[in-house]
Length: 459
Image (cartoon, rainbow, N blue to C red; front, side, top):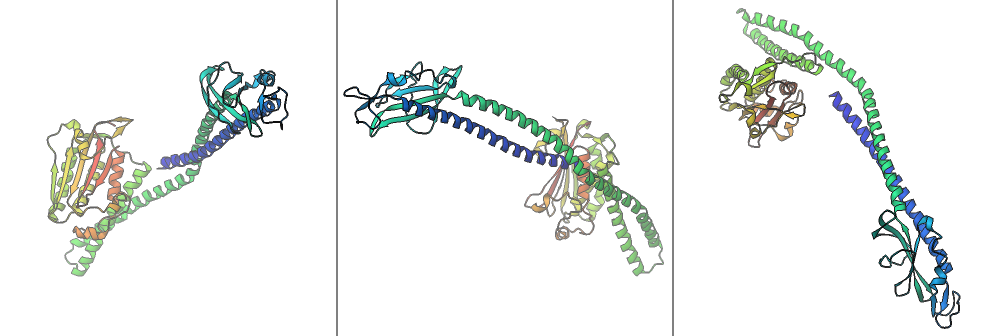
């Protein structure tokens, strides 16, 4: 229990910290990437401004050079405008293209035309190119600007910057962030595990003291209860006792017997929780155990007119033999069968079925696991035709001291005060001690079925 709680605390601590670290890393990555893109766009905008100032604009009529506010019949002298802009920006790998007003390429620093459509605008765009350049597939960051004087369009200027100057640093940054994030999460997980262990230590110590107190108190109560019961029984033997006194002594004897069972159950659970008593590991044939338990419970079933039936065919011994504690297994099935009889009305039926491992799936059970591998299992079903279990009570059925509505017990003809609410908790503890599983099925039409799955052979 404490290990599970410790794992959950460490997991939650690590998960929350990991989310914060991932948010920070993602924000940092987005910030750096957007900063690099903004830097490239600023460089492209600067190149556009420089080239725009260096354009040589001429009149198409007399060849004179016109000013910016001249007549509308103008054109750009390409050779005069771009002869000094070929190798100035080689370090930044800036490429320049000039297009006439009809969109035809007139001048370029590229070795071959890109054949990309023009998208005039002040914002940069990322464009893939179907060729190899700079040692990898070409992706360009481009900015296209329309050059015009007044209402006349002189042409289009497009400047390009290789995208790898953004992708390479961001890719390296992403790998570094992933590595550091994984390292930090691992460190946080380790620290979380240590801190959760420190946080759980006081709780563990308190719980251990509480379990020890329960075990000691239960053990100390057994002797006085046994003495009271012995004295009451001895008094009941005396025939000289008045009828009224005899009735009172019978009540005391019945209450003492119930209290003794409660103390025994508490002592068993306390020892199971503390690990004080380990079950004996020996081959136990379940068919023999079930036969003995059914014989012991037959008297109670006859008194209530309940048909108690044990069903199993001739099975191979190795298929119904488990490694475990015979006394605990007998107690397990005694609790389940006695509960079934108690909550079954008169003239009802309780059926116990023993199935081989090959039939486990057909009975709705699942394979047990031992060290990560599937092992053969044997299935025991305890089925009754009683009042059934309400759906909201199924999940709470194995909780300690939990009891179903007493009205349902009276409906089945049982005394609601007889049970302590520990029988099914003990059954679950025994099943888990034997590396098995237990589940309950209760259809809407009534009745209930407890399915116990236990691994066959050595654990």
